[in-house]
Image (cartoon, one colour):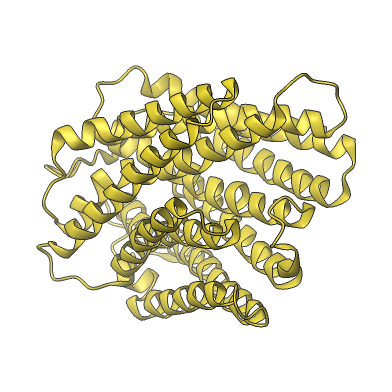
Length: 416
């Protein structure tokens, strides 16, 4: 137990639970980089089959893998929520998600009805089963601002996935009476703003203060902002289904709150009391800045591709930031908890220099991909830099796992 930190490590899951999710997510990042390299000419049509395959590789393959892995770690540690048999459960979720995303990518490219159905089945098993367990556990606790936001984010994810399953079933050729366009719009809003954005906001309430020793978020603000964003999304969804054009206004309100929180978070980081200037801070600031820019251009109705790059940069930046904090800590913590006195220090698991180099590759990829909207040839360079960034992250995760296993096999332990 770490006093006064908000951490309770007594129920922390085994390290392989988290690293397995992270490694799968980083590999999907490599796959997405290759997709971008070869299919960037299709990106002008946001609904092209290859574009949909790329989008869902990023959102389900990369973002969902990392975020589910983080939840498996954070729910016991930050919320005191116990997940039974976490190793077996996480293995089922990881591999059904992996298979579901592969079926989905193939279905978008091939258009085969059976592939859409298989994708819907595996994704439902992976996401809805894990979400059900998490929602049930979280609904029984006295909530902090972070745990409440996590619960809201998971509920949003369920809404997005259920709508997605209906659309996949319709794509498979089943004559289901749904408002496809409206479902698609609501699916998009709850996936990006309800699941991804609210989850990152909720996590930030805990980790920004804890990792970087910043001033606390205002408690009333932290309590109500995630609830308000979710309510705005619900109102948007109802009005969208009823066909009222005013629904867009509530979408703007939700995005405005999300971007306001991004600015608040940047200010908090700038006020940090600990003189730390590592890559994770850079990733956090870049992510929040990308989100603020996304909101600005969202209000001015910029191109979908431009907005997609900015929002992806936001979500992926936070994933890189959290990975470079969580992975070294988990290796060090679990080995120390097992009594290995020669456990590697956190900076020996992933060096600060390595993480900073990774940041510059990622930032360069973001800038070049945004510039590539004007000069198409740059998509080749931007996607190649993104590939290097994800390869570096994959290698960091793999090496961390190897160092952990090496110490378990050959390390020296205290005799208690």
